[in-house]
Amino acid sequence: MDLSEPGDIQSLSVPNRGVFRPVRTRFVDDGQPTDELAAHLRARAAGGAGLVVGPAQMLVHPSASGPTFIDAYDEDAVRGLASVAEAVHDHDSRIIGQLTHTGAESRGDWEMQPQLAPSASPSDAAYEMPKTMSQSDIEAVLDGFATATANLERAGFDGVELAAGPFAVLRQFLSPRYNARGDDYGGDWAARARFVNEALDAVSDRVDGPVGLHLSLAELEYGGYEFGDVPEILDAVSGFDYLSCTVGSHATYTQTHAGVSTQAPDLLDPIGTAAEAVDTPVMGRLPFTSLADTEALFDAGADFVSFTRQLLADAETLSKAATDERSDRCIQCNQKCLEAVYGHAHGGHVECVVNPRTGREAELPPLSELEPAALPERILVVGGGPAGLRFAAVAASRGHDVTLREASDRLGGQLTLASQGPLEPFERAREDLEAAAREAGVDIELESAVTAESVERSWDSIVVATGATRPAVASERFAGAVVDAFDVLEGAAVGEKVLLFDENRWVITIQTGLALLERDVSLEMVSSDHYPGFRTEQPNLPGFVAALQAQGAEFTGNHTVDTVAADGKVTLRNTLTGDTQTRDPDTVVVAGRRQADEGLYLELDEQRDGVYRVGDAVSPRKLDRAYYDGELLARRL
Image (cartoon, rainbow, N blue to C red):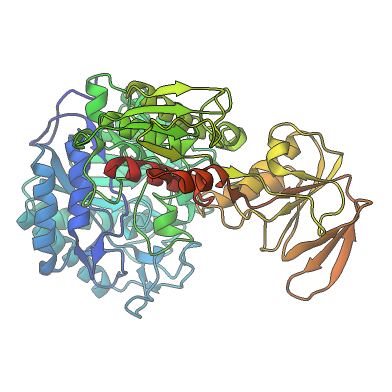
């Protein structure tokens, strides 16, 4: 079987076997889908997805609510949903709408109402005690499934899928963790499956197309059902035309969307078990699905392969695969696809570190459709890090004559250092950036340091992408010997007893801590937050903290380093009480904050016109800003 082969789901013909799964985008306005959502899904259909499932988190009843949900039960949503369906159909792809009720896995703050659930069993993620659903509640939600399905049918969708995965009351009814009912909806598998079967029955006569079931094959939380329960669950559930496989719950979504800090659960065998238990098509996915996984998924029994983050990284992945073209790969960082929606940046929208267009499809055309430059220029790029490489590749693809000079013997900038330990997937970004620049015809000169005096006058424009300088660790505060975290990652020697001070508050601290633990040192990590690396993306942080603790790191939270004396003694100060204490480590390592390396830019900007800077040379920020700065300048120059 091959991704490019057409497939059938009941009477629905799908042009290929690549599926874009529902992704929570926050492109919702007062319960209604927005033009940005239609553009987002249009891009995945245009990029070759034969089937789009979504939008994500379409609600079937007002007893579940929130600012990120689409009120699919409301007929006012039909108009916006019709625009979404039309956007996908414009590219000859099919769209199946996924319906859900979040049950215990959300909170009632938005409408100030209790959350409904099978039993009074709160989710460890939402942590709000839900109300046990009465018979009238059950009937109202079932009516909501029917009404929402009718609205999808009116909007032109090709089918409907009921969510029994994370964030879903249907899964909660199946779960011994969430369902402790003593009536006809609780007890053995047949009873716990009753509500699911009634929901499937309620929608089946409201839609002409197929009815799917999106099922977590294991909840991965204490007291929940496990992979071994799949045959009994599927024996008890009936009435679906295809099965879509996922894993986890809201509380374990870090494994549902495994990133750089989490060991992904093995789904191939459970998918095989599920495929043997049903006589319908199966959609398979892994916690992270890449093109390299498709053969294994087909071999396991999947008929269609579902992608999420890879199609955010490159919306044209599937069309490129059909012609053996290279696509930009997801680096599993979870910074913008999950963190922007769920984490510290709560209130943002879906984006992607390696693809600035993701989440901006309504305003930015795809790179493949950019207009050639009206006046091609000779452009010098100084610095071969992410910002410089992204600018160079996009600018050259538009017809500019681009030369990139890098002082070191390797492209990638900070990525060359970051791509180790748990962040090894970041090497994909470095490789893809370099490949894109070379494919676009950029003239790359390595070991070519640039000064203001050495820059020829013949360049039409100069783009300075010199990155950031490392923190200055010597100061009155740090009178004693202190080692920079970046030097540790490059192999700098340390003693047996190390104190690592977290001024960075991001993943560099965690990465340095793990690197030190590999050397079998005794490690104390001091942070002004509750624990080190506090600003690391929430989907990644729990796994990193667990890894540090499992290897013996000691955390001292809510403290800062007041001084490192000349004899190496360290004075710590409690940031809450002001109390002080001392330490006597062999080595003090500081993970600090970098500063923009802006000297060359400032010199050149005084001497001539047409000088720009991008990335950390503007100000040190996360990787997504480097991509964004470089690409946006190249789009407009």
